[in-house]
Image (tube, rainbow, N blue to C red):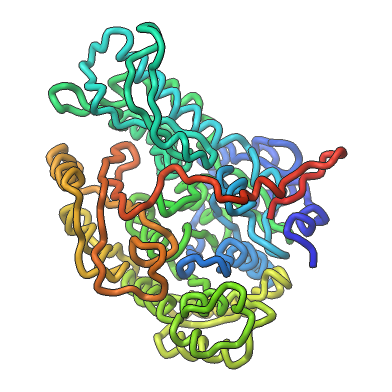
Length: 556
């Protein structure tokens, strides 16, 4: 069996100019990064903005397990399948983060015969977007510490600095550090912290900005610290906005690449929905809607995280109206949720499937609360039996969901035709009446409680005293109407990664709250979630290499 990277390297890519031609773009609309990657020019985006929108299809999944779900693979295969049916589909996907590529994932470009290419470029430095985000983040950190060193005219309280440095690598030793050691000239000694680049507020701002003017407004609102009077100090106060915007000028433009079957894909920003809002950029999604009949997009991790944030944060802010949502599951993952060990998932086990399907059931219920038509798809494995598949199909149809098998990993676009036809039928015959699950005017505590109880299945929410105080403080500062961005483990509906299936009656533990004023949401940190992941005992980096003639191996 060929590996993902072997399949990708054997593929014949078309010049990106030819991919762009499919959706009516000319070479002048592109800013080239070699032959196979390009950014959309500002002029191109201004022209496209006048076009009508296509249909918006969101791909999400059940809670991730070691057995795999295949959300990106399904998204890519679906885009290819629509093309086979004569539909002009454009993908809007998230960029991979380097940390997990070298940590636990090894890559994030889809899999099998449903991948976006060039795979190595995408998984490594791509067009430099994350480097730009890292640089802008750390420029602000440098300007902040320099301001304190140079007289501290703003009266910044070094004990109340909120802005953290970032790095796009899993590195646990940077979570809590001390800076400014040395002589008086080396800065003020204080505790500092690093987050992974994709958890930076800059990433959220980039993904939610409509244009450069909006980007600069958002950058200016970032709360970096509080002064000795307890008043917020912003990036605008530090005169950081112009220089940060300059670093982000090109990163703001969506990237275009292609699938193995030459379907256009806009890949831009936003990977992690457990520590951020986890969607690709508003600009990429809006451009994909203008370019094609159907935009296929995805949101990170399970539907309790990515889909909820796509609906409650991104769609609310950007005025998006999802027409359908695809919920990806695998029989293997459902059996894992039913208590089967990872090495026994290939064996038929109806009892475990019946026990574990409650996870899928909860995600169906959750998505239906947003009043968007739901299509469930099983990402097919050769070990799945007819009885297992029939049980899942019947289970979904009884709950008002359309159902289709997906075989895109093995067969590419052809393996997704049944799913694509099912979605087209839903788009033709079922209306979406999308609405967020809570109104903007609801209090922050009530928003948190709504998500905890309605989406996660919690009975109650508990707050650390500092989190409770900060919620009151944020409300006093006029940010009570912001949506909430929940930072939670992706592996469970609860805040405890070990609670599989459908946990009920638990208390959600909120340990930290802070305002991402530039992004326009309030981050609520629950359980033991980390904004700077660590590496596992055997990182994926161990298996990555490059040959003498420059061929990369080990990305998967």
